[in-house]
Amino acid sequence: MNVSRRPAIWRLAAMLVVVLLLASPGAFAQTQKLRVKIGPANVYERPRTSSEVIMVAQEGTIFDVLNREDTWYWVLLPPDGNGLRRGGYIAIYLVELVSPKGPDVLPRTGLPALAVKPPVPKSVVPAGRPTTRYHVGVGGGAQSAGRAFADDVVFQIYDENGRYHTNYSTSRSSALDATLGLRFGQHFILAVAFWHSTPAANADVLAVIPHPFSYNTPRPASANGFAVGGVENDGHLQLTWLVPLSSHVDLSIFGGPSLFYIRQDLISGLSLRESYPYDTVGISGFQTVRKSKAAIGGNAGVDLTVMVWRYLGVGISGRYARASLTMASGDSGTIKVRAGGAQVSGGLRMRF
Image (tube, rainbow, N blue to C red; front, side, top):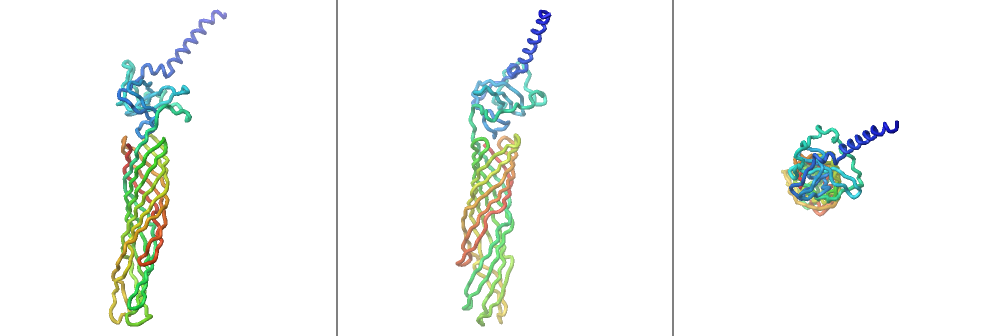
């Protein structure tokens, strides 16, 4: 009985060996291989050039093909020092298939057995070097209304001291936002950002004007809605953590120190409207003086970018930046001003 079972056992063993050989990557690679025809060629972790470069392949390098995604081949890299292999992406125009009799590589829907990538241990990093990338953003946005301050000015008229108090308030303003970043490692970018806005300030004036003929007889006067100019320039240093959400979408979380420069026009004199018997007085105009000040603060925010082409995409970002500064007033005093606020922008994103 033992002798009669031996041929059946050997046939079963032979069938198992054939199945294992056909299921192995080596068996698939016999009909699906490609060669690098333009080198050196970068092999990326994901099917996009902004992803990490996990290997630099020289001309003539042979890879096993796993699949095809649009203009990319998903290939199997050579074993690392631990004998482990991982997949990577290489652009189609850099390679050529070297399996003349084998079928072309089908999209994912044609190879259900290869539709899911095998998990890659995080501790295994194949040979290769990460490539730093320039990240550029240009767009427009708006800054919240965050600057409100007051100024008191004392002046001499009719041999007495007059006084006026001015309340300044800024409305939401449009702005220009530009960012230049240098990527290092896989998930970090060091960037500098520039924010330029021209917030217009409204000034409301309450004044006490001496009487030209009677001492100690002050006359009240007021005026509302005077428009005075202002400029805010912010420079932000941002350490950014890049979080890929998909092959074309990235989330960036950033923060760092900021330098704020405020240039503000302040009311330094009033034009009065009065007539005999001078019991009342009005304000018909004003004069301004330009003051400026710089201060150091901080910023933090997020950015969402969608790449629509290899080097070009669109994005939207939100940043909160703030600093407090003390600048000269309309006369010899000082005023306290807050710079920055909530800054929201959107525009183009470029990567090289």
